[in-house]
Amino acid sequence: MFRSPTLKTAGLLAALATVSTLSACGQGNSSSATPAPSPALSTAPPNPAATVGADGGPVRPLPGSGQLGSGFVTPSAPPAPGGTLSPSPGSWSQVHPPTGYRVALISTGDKESTKLRRVVAAWAKGAHVTVTYVPAGRPAGYLADIQRAIDLSPDLVISVGQALADPLTVTTADHLDQKFLVLGAELAEPTYNVTAAVWQDSSYRGGNDGTVEDYDPTRFTTARINKALVAAVAAAVSGYSGYVVRVS
Image (cartoon, rainbow, N blue to C red; front, side):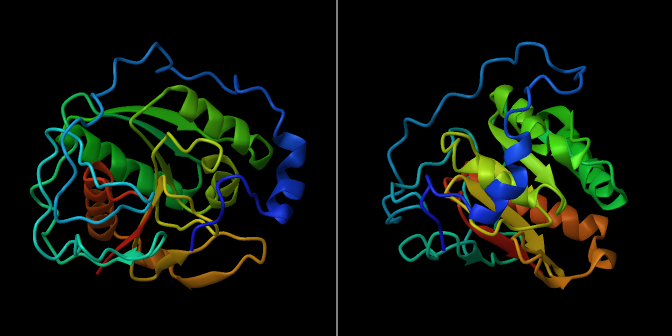
């Protein structure tokens, strides 16, 4: 279930309050040049079969992104906002990011996140997507690191792994016009601009209580990661941000 965009978990705010005023300058980024113009926002009419997306508005895919196949979602009856999509295998195969699509990829340096980041980089190369990597250093600087990624004005901010889940819960609600994708984790209190990409035994869910549900890092195979990533990107560019995309 979504939270109100203006509310933040009290525990998270208390834990992160001391870092919320850090400068967004952070560490240097070799790809910090002025970004190229983003793909134009969709002016196409909404899908006539769709009722609403997670944001309560019509579903509008990005121009030139292709079309979801049967079994990805029932347009007239999508899940509740923040709910789970379990698309049929291959139902996203005809969807791709449009020309000029730009991603800001933020990651910590732990072993799991590094593996996820490499899968994203390989996908981006094959999909002709421009990626700017934003390293996340110490936990005290995570909020500032996330802000640096947002300041690049990408089409999508991709965060990998579990370490950034709680800071993202704070930040994403304040940037509803920015799309986010969380790979390998879910947010405790997502908003409609956040898509989660998960697979069996990757269901780490952020939150103050530290709950871990069905989380097994040994299941982080390249094939599973790539499948979840591609399916979730397909959802995001097709107008279905705001859901958990779970693949088998």
